[in-house]
Image 1 (cartoon, rainbow, N blue to C red):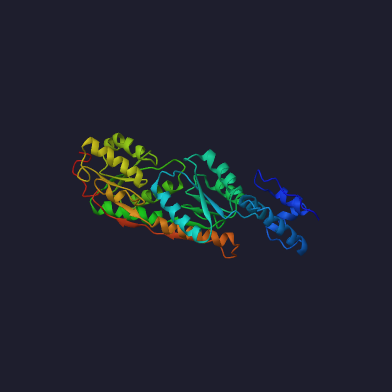
Image 2 (spheres, rainbow, N blue to C red; image 1 turned 45 degrees about the vertical axis):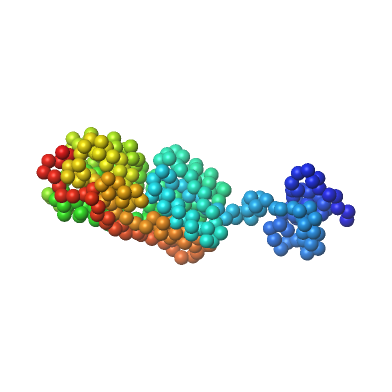
Length: 343
């Protein structure tokens, strides 16, 4: 059958190959994707035309045709937090070794954006990772049923619906509270995280339990947030509360408070102790270095990839929930309780 050369003023496409080979576009697509439903003679003809016309299949089109993109999406609530950056680093490195790429999106702490963003990204990828999702339990379960395969980080596995990688918040909070108690602090404050942050709720619940079991201790709760400016702005309320130590939702908030204390001339820890949570890389270099609790977030990301890969492969085993236990990093931002707090 005579072949008709494709125009060379533009890139050759699948229609050009189909026309030149005298077959349908669907046949060319099946040959490109290696499907064994095409007559061997047609396969040879199509491949010869592809070589003659120097046709290179579109990777995107081929991925969509096969239903495989070799990409995984990750959604975080605040990409500015170095903790999420370390998680992403671990996930990206592990996925790359298996030929996958990670695309990431920041929901910017928006409940309204989280679910639509997840559904949209899942349509463009093979699986999705939700890091510290802000949706409440029922909404999260509904979303996870819509976007399999999926994995959650810093949330539970939702009764085994998906695999999960979590931090033992109770152990981390207990370590920090024990540390402050041993230093003589009996009136401590907690700078709460975002309203819809499950991890903040978990930490607060454990802190409330801890103080309730010790009659000499008092706990003051402060509405705050997750950013450095939130910690910075919390000082007037903290100052007037009479607490001798503050446990911040995360290190970012704690660093913001330390910055404000420096401006106000309040000595740390002589005037007040400040502790964080996460041990982000900047915590060691603050003034003074920040007491916090640490987990290996890169390792968490790598563990998340292994579990997600098993999920993508249709592993029949029950969904795993891997827990990481924080380790106390006692530094110079915490010290003995002052006689006159905040001075």
